[in-house]
Length: 232
Image 1 (tube, rainbow, N blue to C red):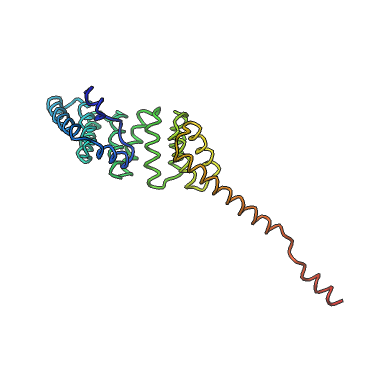
Image 2 (cartoon, rainbow, N blue to C red):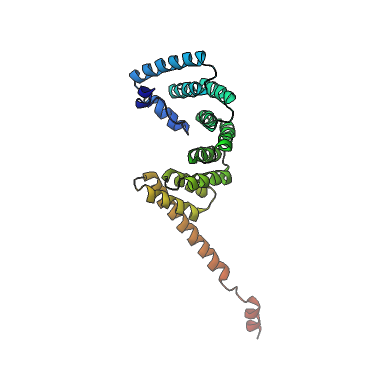
């Protein structure tokens, strides 16, 4: 197992299809051979120890790493049945659903994970990401805010919150969150770019508002008074 960790073959759950595909396509032949050997080993462990949930989780992680997502889901599901109150197993199952964009099922599992462990910012962030994919912006905002409450120093959580604010037209809140992400990680180039773009959008919105306000404040012409003056 230590060799697997050094080779990055046992990981926390992927939170997006992009992260998953990047991990799979970057594997070298040597790593894939090691991965197959590890999968074989843990299949044997599961057969010999059918009630050991940890073996199912590790097998699921390895299958997910290889790209066998549906099989990983089956393995994680077995782990959840054996230990239904394990936040970790529900989290891994939810993340596997997320990889293949089964967002509703991912949300269900993330919520179950939170039911049993509500102190993990990582799970709240994953929940927010799944909700965002379904454009459930208010729910995503609440999830990201909870992640930040638990871990206020992680730039990605602030960035995700900023994106959700931007999607709902709350540009000032988005700017504040992008700014916080940049403060925490000045090399976060995507956040720097989005911060500048959102500031420009906010400036344009402010200018449009002031223009409209000035139009409404302009006195209307007193046509009746003009007619009286002409008549006299």
